[in-house]
Structure formats: structure tokens, C-alpha cells
Length: 121
Image (cartoon, rainbow, N blue to C red; front, side, top):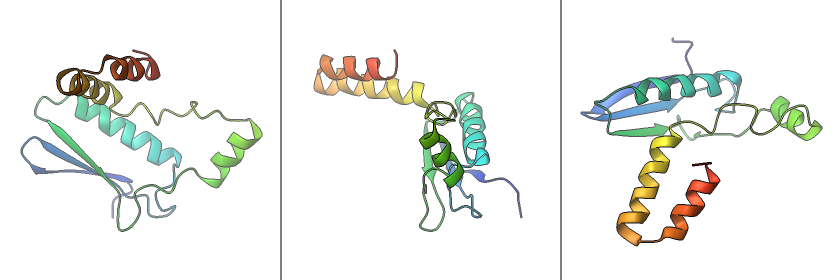
């Protein structure tokens, strides 16, 4: 069995499925479950053939949140929520798609401004 906690497959042309399978800790945000998806999405971002990504978990687990140690570190102030590079996964393309959707479909400039300000665009 593979030691990796992220598995990648292509169920159809242009589609990549990323499955998080950190079975020991039931998909809590261990260092591995932060590092591997980050690396995987960086690799996918370099591919010109990928048009969509499906991010899924295993069995009934998508994400179980932070580890006990990580949550304690947050509570005690030893760690900040932004110290781990978890929330930058594929955000540039998602942000651009969200902005384009609101510009083309809803014509809501205030939504575009909120999205851009939230993600520092």
C-alpha cells in the first residue's frame, strides 16, 4: 500500500480527481495532509490539459478538521491559522473563475470587490 495520503487519477479527459485518504487520522489536517495536496495542486496547476479538479475524501470522511495538537497550538497562541499553507490550494484559478462568473452572469461589481479584497487581489 502507498504511504501517500493523496491519490490522483483522471476519470475523463480534462478532469483530475484528487482523493484525500489520511486513514490513520481520518483526514485531519496533519502535516502530510497539508503538504501533499499543496504539492499536488501545484503540479496540476502546471498542466495545460486539466480543465476541472474534483477534490474528494474517502468513505465518509472529507475532512475532520485540525489535529488535536494543531488545535491546542492555535488555542495557546503557538500557531496562527495562517501559519500552515492550507488555504492557498488552487485559489488563484478559483478566484478568477468566481470573479468572471459574477462579472459575466450577475453583473455585481460589489461581489467582485469583496472577493478581491478577501483574497488580497
